[in-house]
Length: 371
Image 1 (cartoon, rainbow, N blue to C red):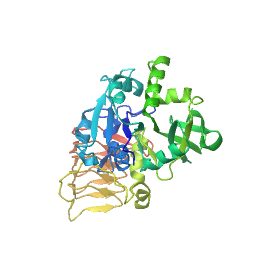
Image 2 (spheres, rainbow, N blue to C red):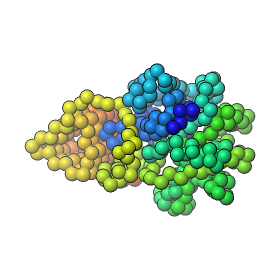
Image 3 (tube, one colour):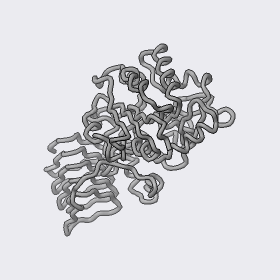
């Protein structure tokens, strides 16, 4: 158990590119599978591993993260023995200083005054389930300065673009960090989750600031790879990187499959989230639903196939939805045909319309629109 470890949920990296899609909220707060937010996975992995002290570094668009995380009680963060701090630095979404080293530097006093000996730093845009106590055991057994979690993937040409990959020397020691440009199919991809001594972490922050005011944590790790004993720990189960609109869309469509979901969700490793008191989904007499994930509170009277339907969505008779993500509170009236699309929250589609994208470029409707 990691009771002597400070858990830090990092901001999204410079390899995360969503453009105007859902720009009103940070990636941490993106809805996922009709029930979760992306940050739920990082916080649940840490909490389940025994961490009791948390720092969540938020982007400029922080409101949705604050509303969802709240006091952290739904992550089993004990209010008497645990602490949770929601922190941010750059409040301008266009600032060049929107990077993690700047965020850590502006809140360094919270890191320095922690009584924990170790830190675990992980972002929220990688989706997986991991017992980090096993990573810590390996970290100690190998006498590593830093241990990085990684995944051997076979789709690095199409996915994980811009992520760091690892080059190994002897005995799993990391010899170099390299950026994935999609040149090779099989690559060991860093999940940007690091375990190290808290003093080592503080030293890296200070060293990064001496090199460049625009450095990221992964930049200083790349520069100092030969100065620290950095070891790799392989994650063996399902991993997804949510760093583009296509990956956000395709990962959810992929996880509609029950066998694939079982690779991510483990019966002994719950992914905690904020609960809702919505009533069960209501299916009308003409509803036709195939291979989809439907959340509580939805009212389905049309056709839904291979889609994710969030809470409190209303789909009227005569609507056809295929291969789409419909976020909470959306209303779709008769005559709409939607395929390969993301419809953001509280949008109302009240006129007959065809909205069709593709798997690589899904159509996107902003929240609170009337179409």
